[in-house]
Image (cartoon, rainbow, N blue to C red; front, side):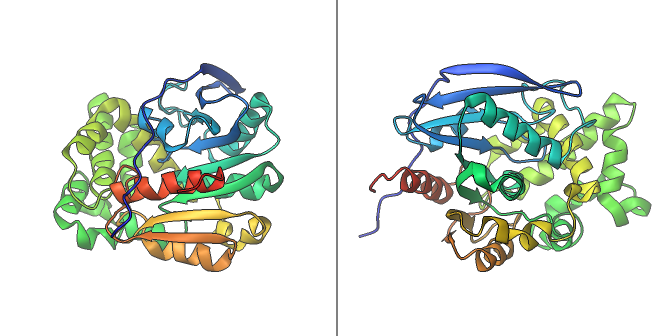
Length: 320
């Protein structure tokens, strides 16, 4: 008999919402869900340039956790919308620490997927004394091989038709550096040019996110409210190598080696292939790697949901 897969906890309304002014013209939207004073956790969304959704609130037992979720700089309800100035990895790391101080937590669980996993590692390596444990999904270490895979050669060989759509917006003479070509269009003074580039960039990401096609997900990625900040911020971070030295997060794993962790990784993840999760696990013996055999990258896929909910339950001491 196979064990029944876990699903998300019931829909939940935040018990607190607000805006935190972090300076440099940026103000972050945040919300808190669960039970105030329970086990603290922070959720780091993907992208860069993604944002929160109501389903993100549902990955923890609300009776056992006090969870803070927030839209990163330029994302979601944070202001200014789609802003790329004063927006980088280390400013967001500082924002996370400001949010912890605002909540009054000594330590908290750090939970992030995809770019959120990158950010979780950057934050934990900067503030290891403020982290109780780490839960990651779809590990992205921002190494050159991973960037090359997604925007040069790799995913292109699997999602061939979608790759043609993505590259088709760019003249052949510029295709040797697609990220730069897209960034030029995403920052164009012409709105039509910006919107067309945002749509194609975002749809490429949506197409590589799931094991099976998901029309509803692609519709959401095509929506300008999601596509514009996602594409603009994401392209800038790729262009700037995520403001990290090559393999920096892997090299600095020793700073968090004492912390427990769980990595949930889809076997068929086209966006962030399992090689990065495996490299991280080998460097971090205190972390468990849970490979989901029938999943891709998306946090919404049933096997990934099951793994993430089991991970949060585990760290809350809840028996399956």
